[in-house]
Length: 116
Image (cartoon, rainbow, N blue to C red; front, top):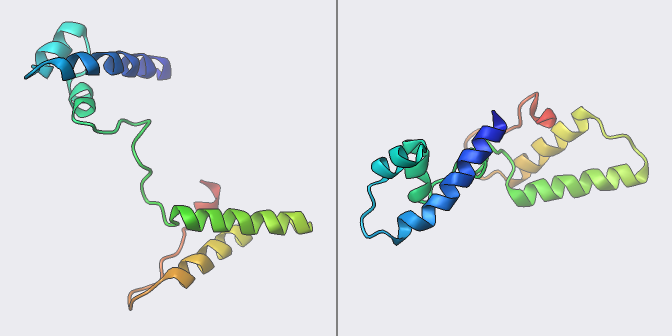
């Protein structure tokens, strides 16, 4: 199944330059003619993401916060203390609390977040 998905993505990637050279391409006809899924071809033609390239959803920590968490956990590991799930969760929540501004509730990571 994953191989078929990758194969179709490769065929779509090859089709995009051809479609972009056309003045007003009929994506539906092209998809039917070449055995490609219309919606995926249209999404790719309109510079959309696919399952492999789309941004991750529901990310609590921003990239720089993730780096800070990783560096902190690396330091804890270098000292010789063990890293456990509760340490990861509480440290992530502390980073979120420090960065929080406003009157709303402070965002927190979920119970299973460290496992993701």
